Length: 244
View 1 (cartoon, rainbow, N blue to C red):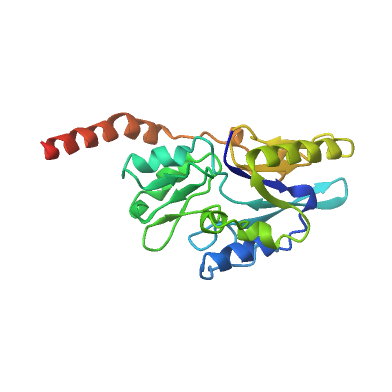
View 2: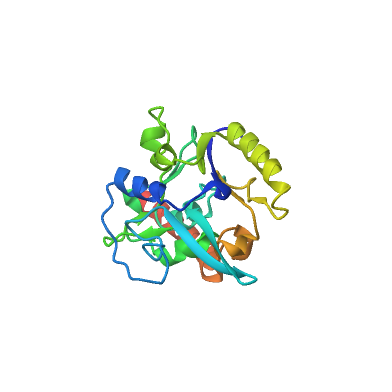
């Protein structure tokens, strides 16, 4: 499989949030309203100005609290369901770049119902800006096309964030997984055959985030399925009538 991929090695993440800040800085995104949730996670969730978020999840193991860190971002699916959902409304609103595999939203997404697109995404990633334009991680495609690493990878001080060709990242993922299995029997790669943002975790995925893997959430709602079946074909018929 050609193209590029991320490897996010959570065993090396210290939750410094450098990746989160680099993403915000490179994309020139503004600040988000936030509140104290009793955790260092800030803001509470992804939003129109936050494409990458280091999630903090606290659990008890015996009498000891344990933190799980998860640098959440778009997975850049090999077959992105969000693209189908968005283009049920607007043709050409999503670019699926042939060279990198990046899934990039355009300004044509403005006004597409974000709730339906989120329902189609098994990782609950897409968000909307105040003007209704849909946004998410772009894979820093402008940097990558010029031979640079994504901003989040460039600043990571521990090797938690990695980026390269898909073959390189898959090889590195298998190497790191083998190295961790002895100490962490539950270590695994999350959906490696379906996404370009591959996470390596050392415990049950649900300990990190409810949407860490696709299997924890249906990828498409009944409402969206019906829209794809009936609304989109009718739109194309209408287009044909206008052209005629």
